[in-house]
Image 1 (cartoon, rainbow, N blue to C red):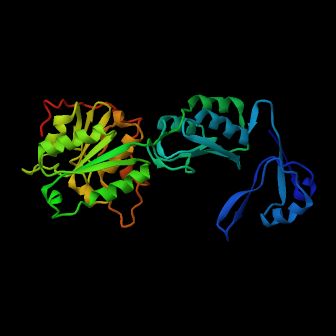
Image 2: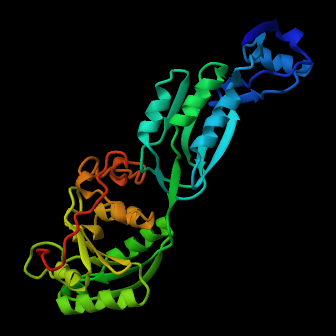
Image 3: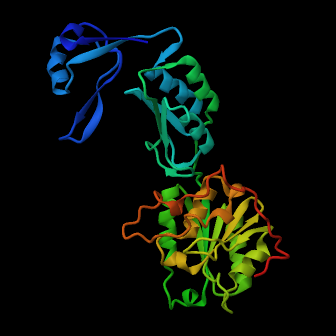
Length: 358
């Protein structure tokens, strides 16, 4: 690459070789004031002087080199997967931006491989982060103004696709247990909270059954909601070791298999997940009614993103302690994120209902 530096007054009439960045400390903004290819006019000179520009660089690339914009775009095309779109290039940088709400999936090792070449700067959100449309998932650029073509090819070979697993619109039924709720002594406090959570995930509330502590009635309620088309049935309460807590037994009686009972995360360590045909049955401990965020939120994120077959419950301990922040930032916190796919053992140790201890 050959670089020619000339005073801005002599650059009038020439196309800019790269974006020129303006920082506005008053507005607290930073962005490209003039884009690559802009033909410089005399009216631009006062603006350039305010930006602190007295000279401009003009580039002549060699045959084996690519411009910073083209390098960033070339890598972006190797990285983009489901649920994402490319933004840029701008100021030599491209971004991957979410088009849908869901869970970000990528290979962290691939990001590290690209960053071993110190001509690249590649930053991204944590693995399994929860994103909404418009959220930037990754941003990357080269540090110099141009890059050797073979260096770009190495980065593209090291790249693995990013994707957003979109949240599905699932129908969720609720079985509320406890004689105190059935008799009206205590108001059910969970239904309203659950409907709000389903709204965040794009789910549909499929109805409620209020039962006492009868194993038979709880089992019947689960079957009714499944027969009415619920993709997930959540049984709230009755999940501890108290004598009147029959929810695990009821779930066992209807399930084809028990995926787990108990998780290394709090609040909500007595969480239970079972499967009946193509649907899920969840045993949610009583804390879901009074704690704003619990292990149930983690589980719902996985099920709505279609990741129910790839849970790594043994890895929930790291980041699995809710901080109960005064101003909750869920899902932009460690408690919302599941173990990264590159370190997870994604196989369940499935427990047969016949041997599940309840």
